[in-house]
Length: 457
Image (tube, rainbow, N blue to C red; front, top):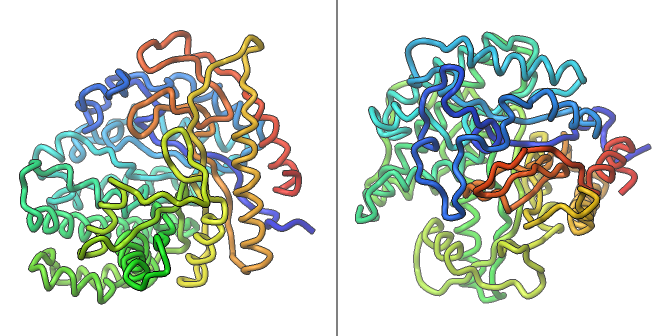
């Protein structure tokens, strides 16, 4: 008998803005990504990899690899161009067509409602998640899609990496804003995001009681730089701030005492309206989803709360001499993935779903129109070996494993040269070329992994 369950979910994850393109087609409204300046690499989000026009071709490739699961995000502005108001039927039909195409091949759609991108009008009118009005708009959007998708969708992720999404809200403020203003904004955004997540759970119970809703974080194991007690305490504070506080709300439906204490001491607590906490308390998540890319090492070089320690470590991470790094300076830490799923399951006793994991590499097609990406095979093999140990040795209830970027897409910074996929897309940062798809060596490897349910690594 194999390690993974017979209904284990295998596949890949993407976001709308990194794949779809068609930025001004089909009645879609402008989003915050659409008006960003082009990235330092020269790429923009207008075409991406043109999934909007090529989804049938791409889904056929995923099906050939054996995917039984595909997680993608919806562009809110494709469905509600202004974020609220009139529904754009053309946009909604696009996603229904994608879902139908997935189901044709017995691939479960895992639908993410928010992946860092929102209709521009909501940012302009209400300051994004700072405004309670954005929460109300999200609830209408969530109700629209959950009702429309019906029994076709069994898995919903309200927010991509909700802990990271809350941190990104800080970039809405002027660069000279005070630390207190930044933290006050973040607290308000966090509260509205938690209520928005809860609303997906409540709406699914109302309109799609068969569906499971999972809260998602970017989980990063945080190691102390030494055995020095101060370093260990700094690592614990950073872990609480980044990983655990968000997960506690997902699992328990209430704010942890250390978060409430931080808000109270700093005088930045969000406006909590009557009924908010009861609404939150009823919406405990059905499973916990996470992305995993790397671990982080921190040291106690000066005092600060968990978020401050974390930001310093992001900006100037102490080197972990036991780990290799990717071209982009991310630590390669397979054991960290085992640690991640073990921590999630042991702490919160909910099924765990690894829905992002991968390695970005600068790659070019060879003369045979492929790429011998043995490094990617080695990366996934070592990570899957650790997941198998998490199941057999640690007793983790693991739902599935989805890779980030099963096909080359724009990176989160808009770089095409940072390639994650099993499938090469023929474009560069600045030249769209013909956008043709080519299989890399890892394509057939992952196909055999899925066919054996993870036994043939």
